[in-house]
Amino acid sequence: MRIALVRHGETDWNLTGRLQGVSDMPLNRTGIDQVRRTAGTLGSNNWDVVVSSPLLRAQQSARIIAVRLGKSVSRTYAGLTERDFGDAEGMLGSDALRIWPRLDGPGMESLELVAQRGQEALEAIASDYPSESVIVVCHSFVISHTLRGLGHRLKSDIPNGGIYGLDRTSGGWAMRAS
Image (cartoon, rainbow, N blue to C red; front, side):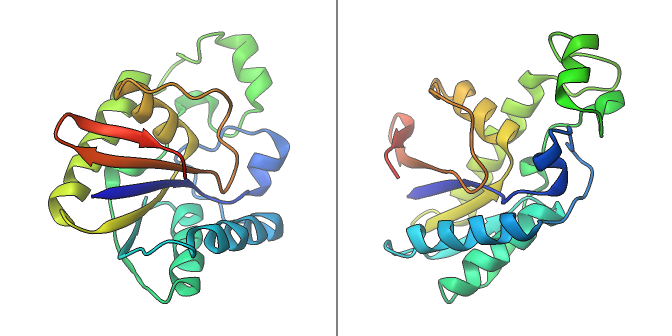
């Protein structure tokens, strides 16, 4: 089994540096274009299934990718929802970091919980589609902390439309070049 973890396209809150977390923001024009380019990159491989987070920006991104690949979005997984930023939702990231340098303020979901539910979502996807190649559209914190929880480190921030490949092996999840 192989998975492509894809970050959704840009929203207006991404553009302005706001923490959107579980706030349900749509893609902007740039985000739509980013996802179209991502779909073009993914189109060079054979993909069986497209799934996503239930948040609007991820679902929009998944639909764009699925249509480009002649597929439909099979389902959403709640475990792929972005981190809940609690009281920091909607704040500029720089302001939130000044108030809570570790981004651990009131109502903020722990990074450990984000990693745990991301890993559980991967396991559910693997169980639901054991022999398929699956595109999973979700969010930056879910991708980065799920990968960290699996023992992988990213060298940079996750761009909108970014792709991170995983292969299911007997030893777990191996990261691959996408």
